[in-house]
Length: 277
Ligand code: ADP
Ligand code: MG
Image (cartoon, rainbow, N blue to C red; front, side, top):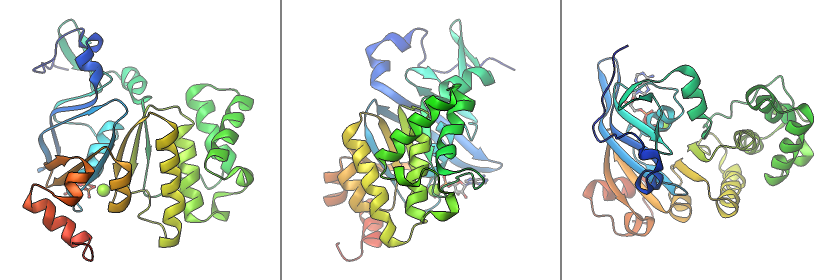
């Protein structure tokens, strides 16, 4: 494979304070699916510990951003950085070359994602859903993995469901197990993609309150894609409104939800919050 040079990259930047401040970074990323360009010259910098909410109409590229971070998608140009080190490339001298699978797997360890569809393994009990990935990916012993699983189940209020099967749980409970399973891998960056969208309205709050607790108890970096504007406003330090793969507005929740600078943001909010604006 050919070497790829990325502008703005200098060897050793992982040690500089500036690089440490940018914990998640997209630099001029190009993402296309066949002939369709979804992200073009897309740049975004997220400092460590930030709670970032991504909002915007369906198809604006929010999920793609999270899937790129999980390396579930490849990129066609630019670079993505986690903790000052590239995600899809490895440093070789002063150039970046395409990353090996081993390198990418190591970088991916920083990240955990919770999806809209809970994706629990139906043939594994709740505790095994959380313990098995720890044994397989982190080489934890059975006892260690189960102890950690119980601790996390307790923290999401589901210790009493440890021996249940996924199909015995409500949607809200499944999603709380999925959150516990993601946390069991000890990521320092958490990605949430519309995790309450598939739930009946009465089950949304129990999942959001788990996120609230997580946000209060930890200093993890979190990227949250959501249609729950009230929750985004309470949860986020920063909100980005996206449209057609572009960041239209990037502001504090106070500004973005109360006095957005852009007409397009205002129109979107008016549509999604018809009674309040
Ligand atoms: P959002 O999460 O904001 O609704 P997505 O990131 O899912 O948006 O999608 C952004 C754009 O990329 C959409 O136009 C969508 O149709 C397109 N897209 C996403 N995934 C694929 C795929 N696997 N193949 C082709 N097009 C895709
Ligand atoms: Mg989406």
